[in-house]
Image 1: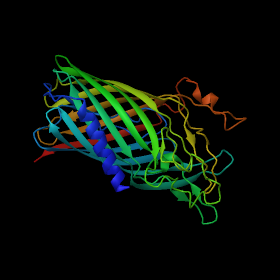
Image 2: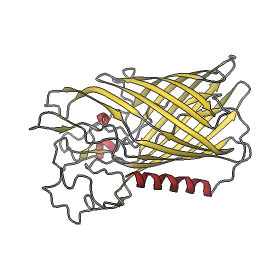
Image 3: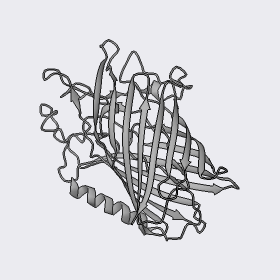
Image 4: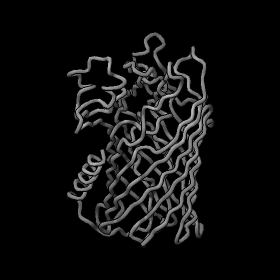
Length: 368
């Protein structure tokens, strides 16, 4: 596992640097939020990105984000340190180490009694590289790779009736994911406009073993020989070894940062994301291979974000609040394996509007 992570990271870095020519950027502005490659079935996430003048001068830049998300029947906490270096003037290489905690109700089917569950720990690592393109330094390309280091088969219950927790309670996805991003900035008299587009593509890989991780445990009673879901080295699509499927996704964002106040940068932005397909979930029953469309699938999701940077020279601080908006999804009540209703884009779910929010706090420093 360690060897594969190292090889993939080096390959991604070599690929990204092979097609670019370093040029020195001319703008002091930054929009750094870490490349969000993880694959959750689409959606925009919380949309929180660092918008401000940032910090520079050292060989190693550290950015630490703490986020608290709250909904009607769940809450989560995350700590996401990101470490980055610049081997060239306009090239940045980063590593993100997410730590998460989830609490909330779990109810697999409407005729079951909901129960409270809690999980936490280290999630999926993410490597990223970004390169400024053009002589003005206004545009950049980024490539990020998420690696499945977080556990994704967390179970709860008694020994006689163990159940796998939903994906939202897992620490990882069980998938690799590549995210290609484009970013562009345009300066104004007292601020800056920031634009971004990204495409994420999850995939599965067992290059060394060539087999599903659970062939000798959960699927020991199944006939898995020559079945490409259980006997494979590479899958070009996002199906993990439990049977959950995460489709590719597109997302875009627009933000404006205002620096008319000395020592502060106010920012407002909106992010919109959509999966290119319907997400499927694995069976909650341990040892049962029975994937089905995710009843909580969202055909689109957006977030409105306000941020405030305290532009300190050595250790700038950043506060943000994010408000999500998503479509009112629907499932087929007659056939739970029919995902056609979930493919439709519906109006916003007003019953959930203003019932969810995310608070974020970040600090940044440059060392050595």
